[in-house]
Length: 356
Image (cartoon, rainbow, N blue to C red; front, side, top):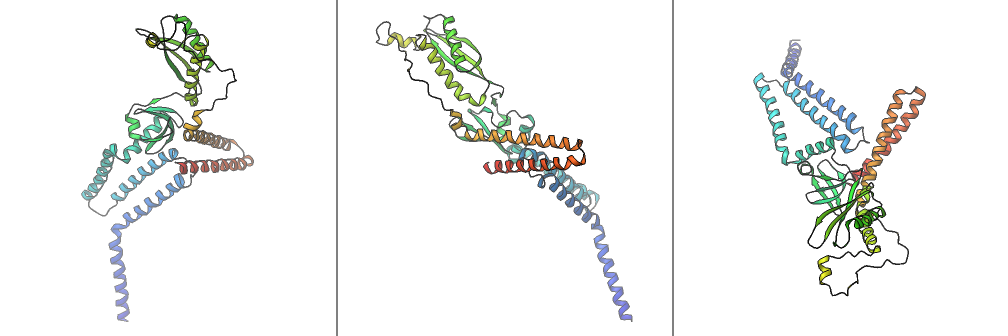
């Protein structure tokens, strides 16, 4: 009997000892469990469940998750079973580490991520736009979390870090229209009003709107003209430049105006009155192929996917608005339409990520 009582007393004493040892850690264990549970739930709701979101749309949520993770770490640190001074030192250490990461971010991957956020907020350009940076020009094919990729006129793909795109001057061709120009030098023997008339006709034949002519220079032997016009279909920029050059040649040659340097004209051994003017062929014109289809194939595909993505996102937003206003009978049908649109958007985003 005494032995049983002693055994029971020993077990109770052991349990009390364990509980007494664990009791100071109870707030810490509860905090860890709550923080981990909340972070897992938020990650599922904000990211894992939202498969139709693009990387640009996920970025603010990922940043939010990072902030919440830091807050959770501070909450856990505040429940540590240590003295107040030690707890404050741990929290201060977390602050120093975060500050160090931010300070180091100017030349690291974190810096490119932050620059990527700046580009997405300011949106100085978008996929498909013509840009020029660091002496390279081309169309934007991708705006990633770390870099921006462009496709040049030689069909090369060049990636620039986001920090470079933020810190360097970037020339962007406006989607609303671009000015296409051709410079040409002609002799003083023809009045500028006659030249201007033919150049304006050339711009119209090149399918440019609002054309204008400038006299940009008076040389020793020649007058420098610049014919310009507005191109509304910016994606056809290369074709428009070629068309304008051809139209200028045809307009001047058909008017018996020779395009030759006056200094060369004084040196060439040609009889008086003989001009170097190509005769127009009598056969019908062949249909021109678009060089943009070959040069900017990836940029064109990326732009079309971006437009499809924006269309689906707008469709989903419109369906959400209708769901909020509709009755229960109509709501099920709208939810089915939304699920279908989200599935299409998910496939489009996954295809875009695989191509990238």
